[in-house]
Amino acid sequence: MAPIGTYSSATFKFRDNSDETSRTRLHFIPLDKSADNSPLLGALGSIPVFGTALIACSDAVFAGTDMSVKLDNGSAGLPSDEKAQREMVARMKYQDTVTGKFYHFDIPAPSALLIAPGTDDVVIGTGPGAALKVAFDAECISEDGNPVVLLGGIITGRRR
Image (cartoon, rainbow, N blue to C red; front, side, top):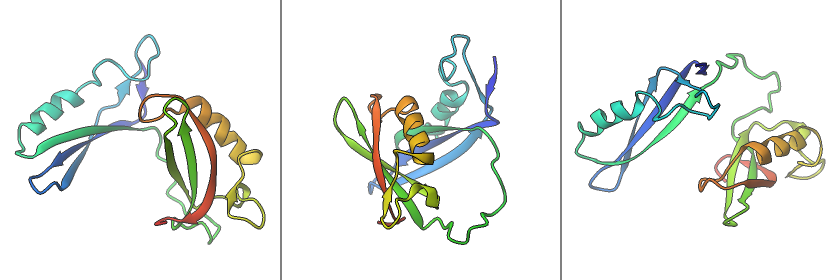
């Protein structure tokens, strides 16, 4: 079996008596692809076993586990464009094609190639925006597990 990435991580969420949430994030050995090429092997390796032990150590209510897999190390460098700031984002909107629910995600420090000249609109019909739309529509799903379609985006501040 082939490992997926260099490590996996899980964030265990707990809720206390005052309805505040705490998180514990830990890293685990990489998950493996299964023989039938499904994304993750069986019961996600050692993570549920550890999670059960961790939950038993807390009086808080267990509120769920999120998983992530580190695929590469990325770059430690800085962008050369001084306008590449995390406070500026492309807020991308997408829709679940079954339920009709709308969702969004942000792209930090969006490339000028994404922006329609003279506007704050993100272009998804040509260039890198079109490549993003094709990949997003083909590979992503909604929180409900349904197909989604990328609708477009707007340039905005991170906290908007």
